[in-house]
Image (tube, rainbow, N blue to C red):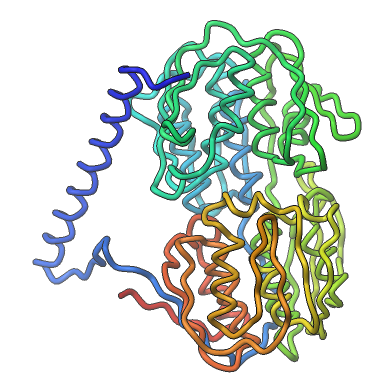
Length: 479
């Protein structure tokens, strides 16, 4: 769907709203400074400075799983009854989803210490938001919400920050258009997205060209509002949190191999969701403890969903000493305590079947490869080029600046392990790259400075405090 005058007007309203808020923040900052209250300028940038001394020890619990936190709000909002959530990630990305559903007319209490209470409005109970829904930096929020809102009887506009506004959205808008949705995008196929009121959606049978849990989830959520059956076939398994949670809310999900289907209509029943600790956040500590001599670290209550444990499988193949203890079920998801002790790592060719199971953890895995003996080769991971940053290029450049031989490839990277040196690297506002290089300093020959780290709060609020407690010598500085 091309951009129409309504879309242009809504985009301008959203842009004007953000500009007004920005000016209001600047005025507030000036007034607070008059009264002697320090307030950091929006132009300032957060740096991490990490010294190599130290090892990681103790028992810790990283924040709740971001993927499951998003989905708990979305499905709780359109269920009948009250959904209670524990372990909710209070990071900026999942809070963006929570705010969006409040704007869509859903009463949500919390979060308070990870507890959230959602008063569901039913499948057809959402109301049009009064302004554009600003999803900040969260690609999951935007892609999944696009599917859920594509079947509504009202218009919606979805906007995000500069990084999110560069990320490709045709991968969801094109199959949704086949279902009957009408969605305007920029000429580049990016946000802002303008969704017209749905007249009718038809279920489709869609074979995804590349593995993507976000695309799969988007189409399944749209399928709740479509006539007939919506089926998605993926070329390789991806995380199945949406399917698991739909079943927890009472929806029948047909699964056979890499094919998953839902039927439109019916409704969802409220339930209680217990969110495990995020394995993507745990990954940085798994790598850090592996490369820092003398480390012995236990991470508690981590989600070990089979579609998410690629990082454990790959690290073990590299020689990491990782033990899964106290395996159990929590809220329909498998969880366990992960004990990791330092061990010599060796470079490997990354198995192709593990790539989609570790797609978010590769920045941390690249650090492991840089500290391993020999060569690590990753192929078939072109998806990494369209994340919050081009993670292949940005990680390669950072590793090169620290003295590591890293060759970016169109769909992956070749890393020859060696000795990380001191230096300064740029995260380009990508939370996972910032945390990866912070852990990399454990194996470096000197201090590592990482620029543009404020977005770590999108997925891991409290990262610096927890990392310090575990033994990382890390300082924050605004400049």
